[in-house]
Length: 299
Image (cartoon, rainbow, N blue to C red; front, side, top):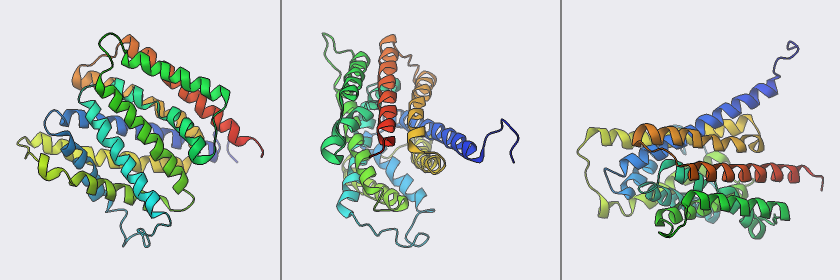
């Protein structure tokens, strides 16, 4: 028997899951920071290709048709392909937006994903939004307006690109939820990397410029490895704690993004960005907690 007051095995597992989730979102922050740096040295489509191709090559060591029999077998092939295409589109638009926006701005806008999920879950999953969640969504979008500050000069096009990336990521999240009962995680991960690599390779002959700096090659390698590591750690986190418990900790990514923006690019977040991020995060956490409460209700 564990000493009184000491964590139970289930509690320790949850704490481990939370720690792994924070590590995963830090990896994603490093992915975005590296992509932003690389986009200053090469075409953004080459950056997207490096992210997918290197991650796919690295993941083949763990997940391949020989080590995981039946890996390619899927009961929902079109949904698998569509989900993978949505992730590729999200990555491409996010990396393109990173060329012009600060790291803290892009992540704050991407935090609007739960609002899009709530809006799309009705027609796609039959999970309709009630009055309280509608208010949270509207408040969250008001927070996004604080981040992008649409004034006399208008909204920077890159902000709209980042918002579009949040919308496609929401569709990707819904597709992931729809696939979960049908295909195992390794199969879904494999198709994501495969389709992304193929899609990213198509424009490569038209944009390829051979890098001349060794540091750029190192950045490309780091980008693919850290992106793959982040997704792998995310799987480990969800194996140790419920998704509803882990979801609020996604927002710790803002801390890493602000720190990396300052250290690597000398970017200091404005008070408008910080205020908008606080509003978006608060609304997002409310939506997560509200969804958890609704799903606990007996039918």
